[in-house]
Length: 117
Image 1 (cartoon, rainbow, N blue to C red):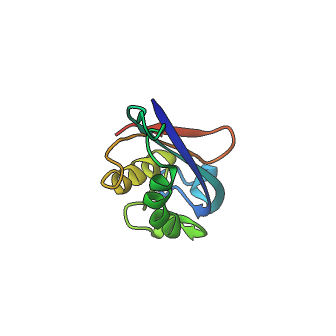
Image 2: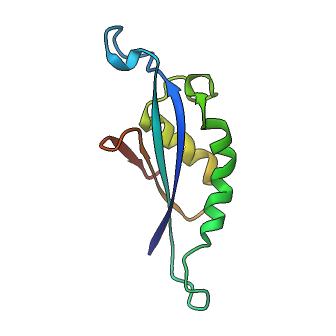
């Protein structure tokens, strides 16, 4: 069984490696949505896979770094595509969530990616 907790943050970025005329080369912002999924057996006594508070606690330090920031200035996010951002989040929360299954990043209501380590 898997569960997820969703987070939102606002941030600006630009994609420095796309061609000069590409719209994403220019500075712009998004209302990002991140879903952190964990997977495991249903605990018979507690009735859950994991406490949602554990997921919130694992993501909280990253939210402080990402929210209302310029992502290109965050170490490891110099080229902050959704794909790179999903992997960056995974690498930082996996130690706290060994049962991490997937990280979804959406930069618009119709565009995003999933990363499964």
